[in-house]
Image 1 (cartoon, rainbow, N blue to C red):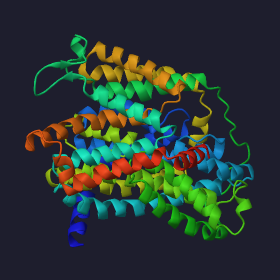
Image 2 (cartoon, rainbow, N blue to C red):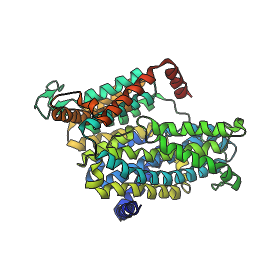
Image 3 (cartoon, rainbow, N blue to C red):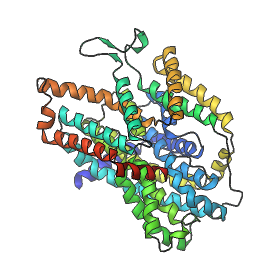
Image 4 (cartoon, rainbow, N blue to C red):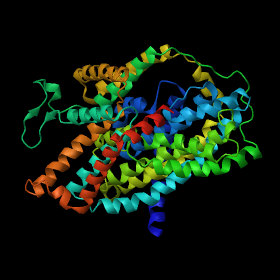
Length: 500
């Protein structure tokens, strides 16, 4: 306990510097803005801002990007309540009761309880991250290359099962990501792989290029296809502070949602996304009168919004302690850390304790900032909601092109990004989810490296992966998860869950 307190003290001393406080505030503001604006999410925003972080020291860069991530969760609820459009996929559930409350003239209460629940959940999640990160890191230090390879394989298996859409399609996208990760010069043999003789590919595909194309540019193309219908609530927002009855009804849903979201957020794949849906289902089943849900029940806002923010923050646990990104945003964080010369994994705590604990402490500070700045600025966010998307996308494209060119001062990177944008748009049209592709790309390089190390240690014997107990357990888990996913009963139920 004393070690945890001393580590948190170190973290707060790092997070409370003027620069890091400023970066946390900027991240929270940008995150809220992109959450509020439909069609601009944290994945696309983080990919656009990756080049800017080159000039910032690593701790500040991760604090900025983390603030954008959980700030977007706050902003997504504002759009869901006032416009009935989820700014984030995790805010889909909030539209069901939040917008109904807004139409009844209780938008202020819905916004207030969403902010209070998110702040409470953020505090709980920060404590969970701080408590679990150190023990998991100590366990991870016992891992060898075989254990890491098997752990990543199990993580990809979970990503396949929890990805939206069919299992075969998710598997195809992960395999495509793994294939793209092998492009470039083999470090051991010096031979070029799948470069087709094109010099810009000799060093491999840059992470920022792939992410910007598949997520940033492709998102712009996808949104241009959509017809804008923004039903901004005309009625007054009302008082932002919930009544005593609202707080009484929301107290237990906030606690349950925080715990449920914190647990699901650790899962690879779409764990953090599933939290709000699971919370809404639990609250509806526990309610004395389930018919109230969908008609303006405040519990339908409090629980899912708490689960939403808790899951967003506990998804940092496998990233910081094991170096395994559980979702696409955390994969971007891996890219950001790699850009700054930091290898994600258990050694981060011992080699860069200031970064490790500084990021954790900044989460609590960021949640406090979001609580303070969001409610008074509701009027500002409503005005932003009235900005047509056709006026935003040219600025997004220009800013993104400048950013991607600045990475290596290479026009070829811009051309590659455009190519990946077209591919990403095609994936969307074919209903292929792109998040598994990015996870496969990020983990592919790490998997190849650990696979080669494990085979070198065992002198080429693949049996070492099943002879080591921890590695064998992870491989068995991956097989069980994939087998369960293809069972007819599980596959049918899985489709029902994602449709709902």
